[in-house]
Amino acid sequence: MTNLTFKQLRYLEALARHGHFGRAAEACGISQPALSMQIKALEEDLGAELFERNRRQIRLTSFGEEIAQRGKDILRALDELEGYARASRSGLVAKLRIGVIPTVAPYLLPSLIGDLTRLHGGLDLHVRETLTPKLVQELNEGRLDMAIVALPVSEPSLTEIALFTESFVLVRPREDEGKPAPNREALREMRLLLLEEGHCFRDQALSFCNTKPRTVQSRDLLDASSLSTLVQMVDAGLGVTLIPEMAVAVETRSASVSVVRFGQPEPSRTIGMVWRKTSPLARQLLEISDMVRQSAGVLRQTHDASSSGSYPVNSGTVTAS
Image (cartoon, rainbow, N blue to C red; front, side, top):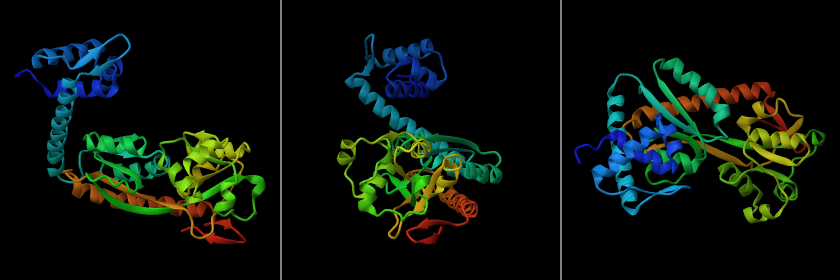
């Protein structure tokens, strides 16, 4: 098996992940014929077929599944070797692959990227925005160095570091300005607009309302793929929604809506960083976690200043922390 290469293993991993020669070739940055040729050469070198092929789809054979898994382990070990080399250099890592959930990325990343590039000018930064399960998968496969997510993730292979806690606020039509904030029971009777299934923020909102997903599905509610869409739906009079406090300044500036804080106990979430326990970049990532925390603090101060530091809640006001 002297002709086996790391490049072939990466092509195998991409094809197994995408299940399509064209998409896998695009992800690898090569032509489809070149990818097909490399996979065929790998099969000939191994002496067995890795994929079942038909007109509509391709799928791994049982032998291919075993080879693909072993190939992942090899590639992850290779990435960690490269990580050790990066970590041994002076200063921060030369390359950093960050994953961020969609309900954090648009609000935190501008400040964080600015801080990282300003302090470490030569940093090669790669950012991936997707849902938590996908981020965890890509962390475990060695395709990300760290991720910013809502905690807990409770993944045994990952280190979790809490960064900050933020409240959720209620966004409702402008005509409701000045009305008392609803309690949980009243909120359950409203037309609550939610992110689509798969977003952890959806589950957190339902948990605060003490509402089972099955109950929500049985009601004629509308789901969205972004917080921006939810706020615009509120502006259109379709219902009310919850958004994290860090999103208020961005998402409500072009919408005619009212924002109100809930009474105590307020719904909230904890945002944190996660990375592989075996990561050679652990020391540097711990330092980066402090930078993320500082960036979030600056974001919060900016938001407090722009919103005069408070939202109405019931009959009084609560200063945003």
